[in-house]
Image (cartoon, rainbow, N blue to C red; front, side, top):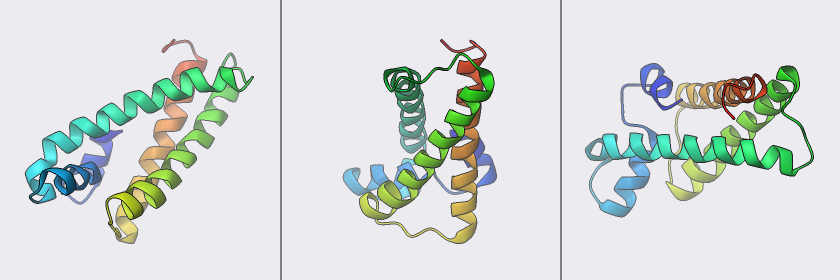
Amino acid sequence: MTAVMMMLGDGGPPPTAALVAKFAGGEPDDHAMPGMILHMIYGVVAGAVFAVGVPLLGLSLDSVAIAVGLGLVYGIVLMIGGMMFWMRLIIGMEPDRDTMMVFGTVHVVYGVVLGGFLGAGILA
């Protein structure tokens, strides 16, 4: 997800670089690599939360179709949470429409791929 966002984005650092800059000082461009690493860590943790959380809710990832559907919903939740909570409230960022489209798309794709991989037994 992080790599796709970087390739499709505006060429600037990931939004998490702004979070690092907020606490470490400096500009987001100064923290592109730590921001990318932080975003990858978010992705791993989010994947683990999905893999563990879905069965705890009494739902099954045994069917690829159901897992992909649940992943789609999860990607939308991540997209909304990322746009509304992290970007606006935590980082204080108001990105333009194009940035939001890329941001939203890659988070939804992440959820679908995650669900597909878990449903197919590739990640388990």
